[in-house]
Length: 272
Ligand code: PEP
Ligand code: MN
Image (cartoon, rainbow, N blue to C red; front, side, top):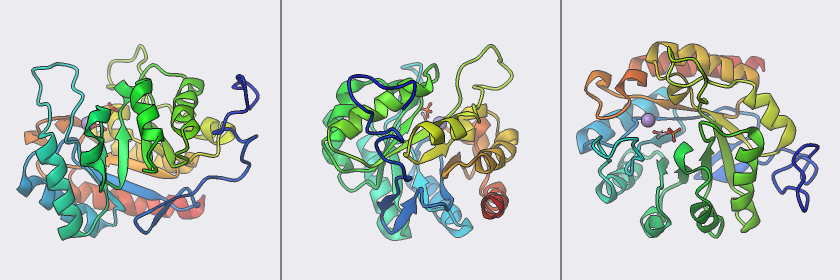
């Protein structure tokens, strides 16, 4: 990999593996040329909330349900998530609604609880939590590794490398917006990350337009742009009552809006 060669060739690099990696999980294939859609609330808040959202995103065609149980919030006084109870609720949804689950881990000590979770998310704030990455590398779990909000492509891929180097090849990287001088949007979604990561690496790339903009009214346009740029997956925050959400309501779209978005996104993927 031209600019990111260290002491050895990077496992994530195109020089090491020319063809795209395809991650197979729970009957789904990520990175095989199709579009994978992950949707759900920022946080798991209650049984009725997570079941209702799971049913509507599944009906609309989502492949995976997302929902944070452990929330790495900027302030310790903000809602911290339902923690272990949230993971248990997600596992019930998985069985009863029949949709695989993506949820975030913040501490390797919780790994046992995540044994039946389909994809483990590492959030932006933990992209360089190397102890956590090494622990996840010792599992075979698919990992959704989100780009740190001030991380370069090289730093994102070297973080992925920590997981790969331990023997776990199942990594999906995720562009979720970076911090710039612009304050109108919460973050600046870096669409160039998609072709750049595709050039440098064989790993699948997801795009999260919800954190990437912080504004629900921009989520559709940015999702379509991400798919047009070649994203393998979208991760979108959906809430049945965004105005009452305990976290990230401003960037959450409704199930009806999601149903429109997913059809348009799939249509664009066809053209690409
Ligand atoms: C999230 O996905 O809800 C989240 C906390 O994302 P990020 O780590 O990208 O801020
Ligand atoms: Mn969120």
